[in-house]
Image 1 (cartoon, rainbow, N blue to C red):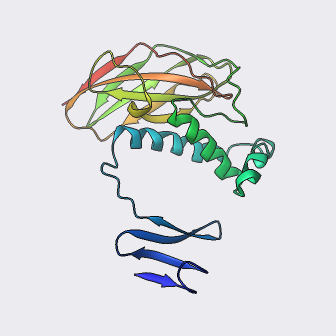
Image 2 (image 1 turned 45 degrees about the vertical axis):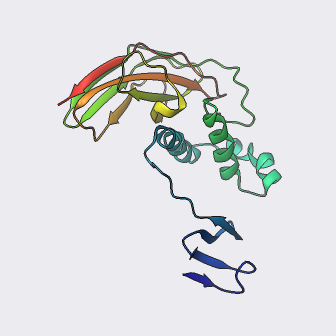
Image 3 (image 1 turned 90 degrees about the vertical axis):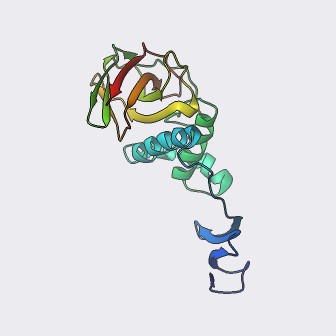
Length: 208
């Protein structure tokens, strides 16, 4: 059912029509789009995008007012908020398997963190992966990748989580819930300016 506050397609409308189109409003602007039902909402690409989306959404609140203001020029180009400019720009970068950047534009000219020996330990339907950080440098975050095959290559569609780096504190990921199987993991650090670090030495463990 479509609920309207004025003629459909003019003032305001919200809801689905015929199971094919959707009426809604974003930032005070009404819009209409086709109704999209993902064939597999847990595909590698979907999970990989959500991993960075979650990282970006959480990290925004920790940025200084000056850092947030750095996104105002890009936001003005599309008449959106600095937050949405930050999210959009960095998600487009990530779709090309390029990590996000704190400031606009990404220069990729700084130094990623130096990572120590990756480790993992299986628990009840879960595996905990620990990435030590030996030298912080200009590190901003760590991306966790997972596969059911050994010697895999890290990619956009096998990323499952991303977490910020805090100095030289260990970055700990909990991968759960898992079905019984052997899981293989790798990580890559990324910098404030959007530079991507090298793969680490792959680790694995088995959930029974």
